[in-house]
Length: 200
Image 1 (tube, helix red, strand yellow):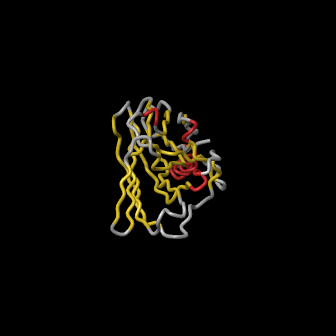
Image 2 (cartoon, rainbow, N blue to C red; image 1 turned 120 degrees about the vertical axis):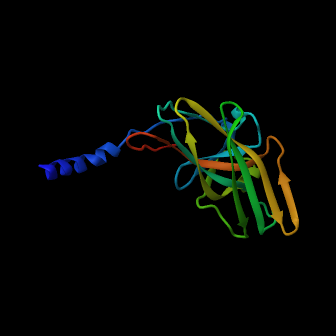
Image 3 (cartoon, helix red, strand yellow; image 1 turned 90 degrees about the horizontal axis):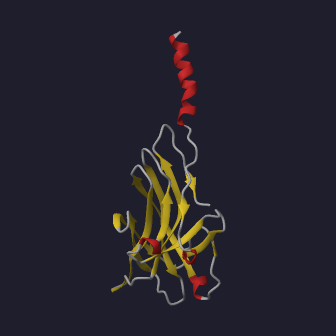
C-alpha cells in the first residue's frame, strides 16, 4: 500500500513542476533596436547612457504574487571600424533602474578583444545607416535579477564604456551614447514549477 502511494506521488511530481509561460512587455523605443540574430531570431537592443528609465531598454514585468527572476544577456557594443585599434581591453558598465530612478544594481562585462574576434551570430541590422553596419555585439554575459512580488517595470541603462589600448585608456560616459547591447530576455516566476518566457 505504501509502495503504491509513493509510486503515485512520484508519478505526479513532473506535473507539479510544470507552470504556464509568463509574458512581459518590451516597451523600448523603436530606435534602440539594433537588429535580430540571424540564427536565433532574438532581438538585440542598444543601451544608452541615461538616468531616465523611459530612455533605456524599458521592460514591463507581469504581476506576480511571489516574485521571480528576470534575466538577460549583456554584450559589449563595438563599432569594428578599421581604425578601432586591436587588441583592446573593453569594459562595459550598465545599471538596472526600477521604481523610477531607484538602482537595482550595476553590472559589468570585461574582455580583451583581439583581431579577428566575432560575435557568436550575425545580426540583421534594423538600420541601413553606413556607420551602423560596423556595429556589433561582442561577448555574452547573463545577468539575473531577483524580482519582488507585484507589478514592476525595469529599465536597463548605460553607465560607461572603458577602452584600453596599451598605455592609453578612453572612458566614454557622455549621456545619450550607446555603450552596450542586450538580448535574450527571460522571466521566471517563483511558484510550484518554473516558467520561462523569451522576447518575441
